Image 1 (cartoon, rainbow, N blue to C red):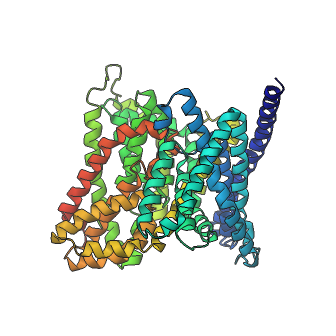
Image 2: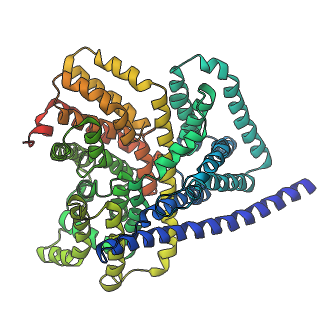
Amino acid sequence: MARAGLSVMLRLWAGRLERVLGIGVEFLAAGLVLCEILTLFAGVVARYVFQQPLVWSDELASILFLWLGMLGAVVALRRGEHMRMTALVGRCGPQARELLEALTITGGALFLLLLQGPAVDFASDELVVSTPALEISNAWRAAALPVGAGLMILTALLRLFQGFRGATVLGSIAITAALAGALAGLAPLLHGLGNWNLLVFFVGVVAACVLAGIPIAFCFGLATVGYLSLTTDVPLPLVVGRMQEGMSHLILLSVPLFVFLGLLIEMTGMARAMVAFLGSLLGHVRGGLHYVLLGSMYLVSGISGSKAADMAAVAPVLFPEMERRGAKRGDLVALLSATGAQTETIPPSLVLITIGSVTGVSITALFTGGLLPGVVLAATLSLVVWWRSRGEDLSQVQRASPAQVMRAFVTAAPALALPFVIRAAVVEGVATATEVSTIGIAYCLLAGVTLYRGARWGRLPGLLVETASLSGAILLIIGAATSMAWSLTQSGFSQDLTRLMASLPGASAGFLAVSILVFIVLGSVLEGIPAIVLFGPLLFPVARQLGIHEVHYAMVVILSMGMGLFAPPFGVGYYAACAIGRVSPDEGMGAILAYMVALLAGVILVAAVPWISIGFIH
């Protein structure tokens, strides 16, 4: 009896501490989102209104951004919003499910514990480095990782002791420690396996962790830390450096801003106005709003330079109305993920710019060649939409009259203008994506006050917390994936792959076929830019020797890589789409298969018909 009372008391105190910690972190994370927006907006006003750029604004925003990412990841962990697979967990009985749920927490905590020491060492090393503009120690930036990891460890432990029985807690800790100890004991054997360890860790360990339900970011992190610590002599602080580099890339500053912008568009009523107009045009067509999603992603793709930010700008606008019209959440997130792959070649694409810079291919030619392949893949995806929606019941849907369409257009015009203004400003070089997103936020707030008066301004604090949580979940995945990509680079795997592909039979056709397969795989384990930087300079000379036009090969490579990036179970983009759509990854698994087949058919068509890529290049 006394033991049961003590257990209840511990749970009670754990719950209270967890709530206090959670409220404090949410307050700080929301404040960081607000500070980020205000800092970047101040930089825009100073640059374009007063012609006096604030040299420190981007640097301060970058430091705040890393703290936002880590504290947002803490909020996401507390809310259970980190992306993970629950297919296996959901099929287990109550006791096994409880144990697996506890294992997901202890598995994630193991990665954070392994990361904590190297993160502290990395931050200590940065004490002597000063930032160029603010002239403060770079440790202010680097400290975000150990502090965030420490808070996530504390949150995980509190969740563990608050939500599970004592026997389950002890069992999960024992199993996690036993598995980690077994791998550590095999270290001498693993050292002799060479690059076969890539399969052991980046396929075997990742797959086992994903199927067990451990959050995807922690799966990537566990595999990377395990590979480097057990099979190499690489100091682990270097992994922390790669994570920081991946999470604080300047172009990613736009991710939380576009996430917040998407939430604002919905909150102010602009989303309802846009959907009403689009619905008046295509609402009477079977699958009409699915086609709108395809077209919208084509329109906004490349605006932010980040595919996650592109999806975040579109999904909140369309998903609520599509669900009200009967669309299944799994199908929506599957189509959103597929459109992410479809639009990888649409300019202004950061991937296009990167591939041009590392291979010497004309960026102008890449921009010209990237438009039509995206249309081809949109057409193949549209066939799947048409097939799936052919039996949709539209008996209760009336076609809008021309007068209704015009009224809807007038109401929606200020909202519809926003993506065109954003794209024009970025394409013409008037402003960066981050700058444009801050202007878009100000525009939405102004329009919400003056034109769309259905906004509930009391929701703003909640939107800031949502932005932090979603951004943290996405950025932690990107940081872990970046460190994994760096680990693959250090292994020498890229050189072995290049030699193999250069000796393939079948000349250009065989090379293109294998390139498609290879980049689908690479896209599933690497971020797009690391894959291009790593393999572009190696494989493009081989393509030229085989007589393949460099722009044509670029389109095939980028689209194939996009397929891998947005295909489960390993594609980071798929989990980012699920996070943005607030949908469990399990729900989209069945629906995405047909879309992936359609994308593959489109990629093969682009590979077989070079004119699609080079027909408009002068």
